[in-house]
Image (cartoon, rainbow over all chains, first blue to last red; front, side, top):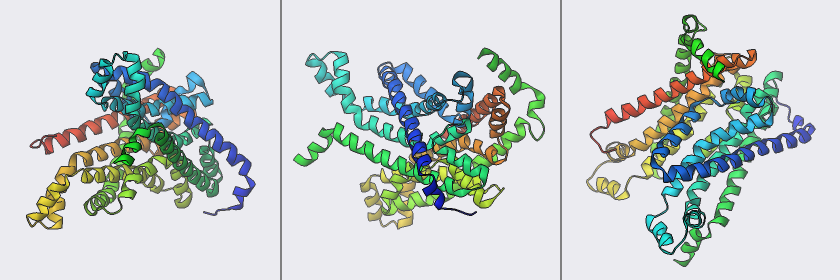
Length: 216
Length: 220
């Protein structure tokens, strides 16, 4: 196994392009995952029988190998970025759906009753009381989904996409480990930075969770 | 779509598909071998580690963040890297699968140990129990439900990911997925995916059943 570190300097442009393409795929998946799982979670939270069905269904999706999901999407969307994003979105649903339902469950019944007693309409109560209070649990899900997506993007290299994952197939085909090592390290770094940023976002979005500590 | 599922039906039930070295029976056995062995090795590494961190309270930061690291680690990259380092052997498959399973088990084992009521731990010590008695007779039994959750989670992920063995020219049910991709034969890909999902679900149910039988004397 011979490494050649000068390869990195010669390929900074490629690495930048691949990194942005990688991030775009992962973030799109989390975005669409949230867009789908938020309304579904509200439904699952309100209508109990649907809850087990939706959560069970998303659990089964999780057991299907990701590579197979990408390949099976080929007749629908072909060798495109769309296939990558749809496949990744399916995986984010497992985490996002469960955490959003659990987050909504964690809102104290008394708080909901207080909102109702003050004449808050259901939709307004959901948007201004329940969802904000559920945010810490939802954000925990968003963090897991983001880290998972960043790691999973590379599987799409088998269908010709995959962002930094292309470095893996490249290194494999040429029996050249340097791009593989660079790809693994960059993926880990992206996941770490994205996770830290989300922690900061959560801190800003939920001021009441740390304001209380200061007063005490 | 309908056509695909109809063909899947005949693919799954045909006799020739089940026999021989390329048959479902053999591939299934290979897949189970990779998954179970990797999970066992991972448990042998991760359980003592999680118990130790939980018991001593040292290294909690590592235990909490290991799961995140495990999720971030790209399996494809790891498999290729170990393959380039070790050549054609089973190492890439097992290293990648064990690396996937260890974080999930460590983090859940630690979480289970951490959730044990400190008063219970103190009471056990106050009764004159030695550290190993506290660990094995008090903490471990109380932490078991979460430990089992970690093991089940790890096993599901390992079964789904063992598909990758086929990428470095080994067997398992991933053979159908990768061969199907190469031959543009979607029925084969779908067949492989369905079989992997069924294996994962069945093993998960078996573990949860085992958990229920072993600990039926305790409220869950």
